[in-house]
Image (cartoon, rainbow, N blue to C red):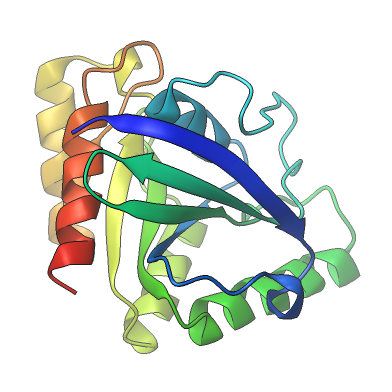
Length: 195
């Protein structure tokens, strides 16, 4: 399934300042520099829609993007990455509060998408995030980023590992080519339709 159009809506410091919409939303979660912004750009085939950086910790606000698929529109909410230590403890705590508030109270949020770097083992802060989601009974799927750096056989093994550990649907993704885009969009649209 294709993306027909996409647009940036707003950068907001907290939930209170996020605009209300009637569209289903997906929250993008992951460690700093895992590839959430690149995922948005690749999925929408718009290289500068979401700002990317080689420096971890650049996403410090809730960034909302409206996505027009062939069937149904939805919103992707790019949230600040977790696990980045080079900011003050006070700022880390502020990010954490805003992230938790959004995940617990955003009315149209139907699922979180937790991104895992396919090149590495699952990290401790990925596990802690997943445990927090499970504790709060928040649905989640996982996306393996940077799959262009490992073989197809390794991708299949990594998907099996993540699905076994987190008990979530896990999809592969690559920013180097767009072979996984249609599958991801179709899965998200099906989640909306079955919600």
